[in-house]
Image 1: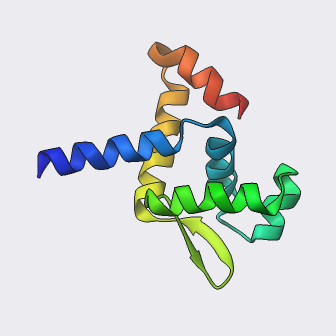
Image 2 (image 1 turned 60 degrees about the horizontal axis):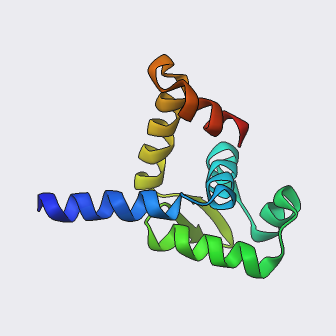
Length: 102
């Protein structure tokens, strides 16, 4: 069981290693829900690239698609809260500054 949890955490972290994907995740988190068109307008990215990133985020249990709107899953919400804590932690200043710029 512990190995499965560790594998899940590593999968989630690997899906957020690309700055564009992390930015997309944060956009969805901050807006609550977003359509593909809204995400395309906010990022300026083409549909194919967005779909690739969204599929990766869905496969990592971070976002879900319901009624043409993307939102965070419960796992995604926990990851978002954790990223916010890291961003505000003075001991993790370098990581926090990077997250804050996205």
